[in-house]
Amino acid sequence: MPSFEPMSFHLETERLILRPWKDSDADELRALHAERGGGTQPIEEIRAIIADGIANAAATGIALLPIQRRAEGDFIGYCGLTVGRASLEEPEIAYELFERVHGNGYATEAARAVLDAAAATRRTRLWSTVRDWNTASFRVLEKLDFERDHVTTDDRGDIVWLTRTLP
Image 1 (tube, rainbow, N blue to C red):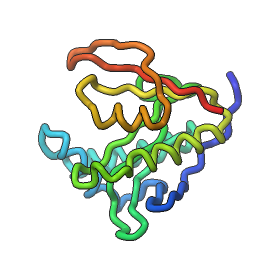
Image 2 (image 1 turned 30 degrees about the horizontal axis):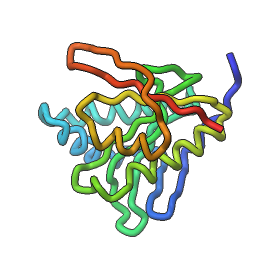
Image 3 (image 1 turned 90 degrees about the vertical axis):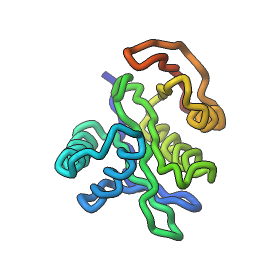
């Protein structure tokens, strides 16, 4: 297995800060998950998701990171690398932001910072998997030069797999 550097867990852009998870992020992450529909998860479940994320980051050297706007200081979502449906060698880039901040370029800005962090780990390729209806995510990935690779189907519908070679 190739050796990879750990991803930086502190990323900054012109407007955003991506940082490690804190227990105090639980309420906001719970609200973000609730926006997906399907109800509100118990806070203990959200705290467990955060604890698992912290442990996985330590074990794998990759992570999904909370996104804060610099000026406002507010939590607006997360972005980072995860094994997801892919692998540790070629992980997935993933992001989810509150609807209230959609359309401002934050997902693209955060994902670009994560791409740079991924390249610094010495990985050569990333994946992304997107539900076929998620036009906004396709726009973000297009701006980042991801290309469609193939489509799979699960019990919830079609999943489009995209990939990007890293420098």
